[in-house]
Length: 213
Ligand code: ADP
Ligand code: AMP
Image (cartoon, rainbow, N blue to C red; front, side, top):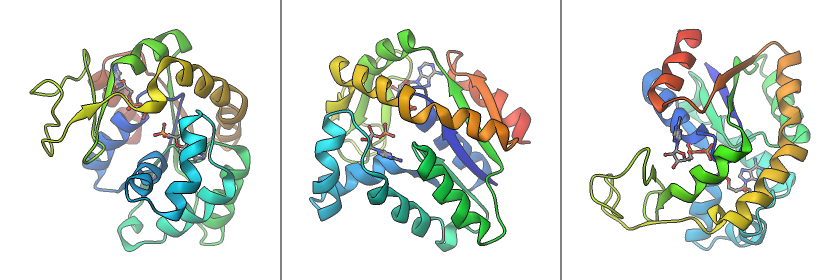
């Protein structure tokens, strides 16, 4: 099953993608996580991406398309994959379709996690990310067992630089102008599934899996 997650920053794409990955045994590929790992390891890609990310802007298409197209050719993607945070522009979606088409494949579901902007601003202020493994929590909705400490690896939890309210506002603007048109793109292709992302995490998950089977 080939799935992409659509939705505003903070809509819950990563949260649902992780659960879907466990349920269906297919890899969760987050381009945001890939960039953050590259920044942490101070790679050339990380150095190129950092300025855009800190400013709440998108990293240029040419830095992300090949990376994803190569990643989905890996062996662990043979049964499918869940792309989280990609595509984020129409050219990225077209490049993905082109690459899949060449192998007689296509995206099965584009899951649109729908959350209004007012909710997003509140939600992002409570998101905490692990500096070690990147796992995400929420101070109210999904707290770690021990405050400020990652359940998975024991490292510190922080508010991401780009989750600060000023940057979230910028990211929402970018979402509306550049990413939201993808909803119509996938609707036209008949692969769109929209879920109300303001519901509880488990309720959203049940709604998605009731359609995916
Ligand atoms: P995205 O990957 O779309 O940027 P995340 O999955 O990281 O978003 O979710 C953003 C924040 O909201 C996280 O702190 C997460 O724990 C929390 N969250 C995710 N889904 C829900 C939900 N359905 N209800 C309340 N909080 C949620
Ligand atoms: P995310 O963790 O998905 O919210 O992504 C964090 C940041 O990484 C975004 O605000 C962008 O700057 C960058 N990024 C992640 N995925 C993409 C993508 N597909 N295209 C462009 N920029 C991206």
